[in-house]
Length: 337
Image: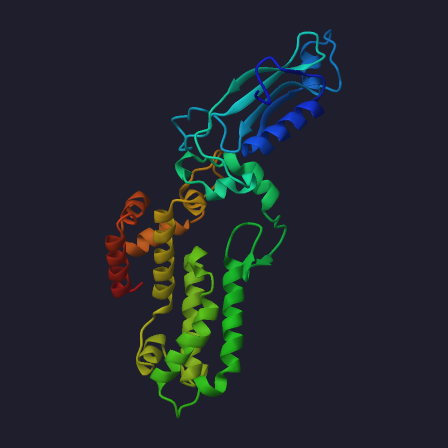
């Protein structure tokens, strides 16, 4: 016998919640309250109608966490969602909540841990942003200011300027700790550059796969690269030597940005081929209006320009062929920034 059936009636909203929780525990699917209309709103439209205050809602709609519209607006690029939903409506006398319709059959399999179902799903093309919005609200950390999570500095506005500045400061601090080795002229510049790549650059580039590199950020990173070389060669600013001269003396070229872009492109290809939650976050289109003014640069836009792949969609398609994607990365590295 099903836990909830059409025409079932409940004397209070708490009773409905209990049945929904029982349904979730039994079938291993998580539901969320997608839409509702309260009694207060109904009384404004129908002032003579009497309602049981324990009912609380005149209309109530529960959907699967994948749930939402069964069809999508042509103007939006939202993915198809699970059609499962249960609709409640207050009875004519206003005393009970009745199940008026049930759209059965999920279009995905159950999960032992419903809260993690979105992450572990094998059908990411059926996930929409709003389908796991409630889970994100429960599970995500609220960022009111800069907060360090897993070694990376996360800012409330989603930008990575603070993280890049923090990484540069940490790299310079560790460079100064190794100053006796990295600035020792008895050691060849080639060996010292290898030590720099081994001990300092990993600190600087930690988490760079998620950075959005603007022109300002790129200038800061290039300046940091030259800061290292000038101190390794013991070149004072009073010498008035250009960056090109410093690079010639160090027998190298600007490589830092190419290394970061290569790591970003490699990770981006992995994410696109994996087709999980990370794929959706990177490529998904969110509902709502754009902010005024020039739009912020996206990670995929910077990679597309670096790879000279044309449009973003062409770059995404290229990731499906691993050999082709690696060739594109190798060619971009050879050409430099």
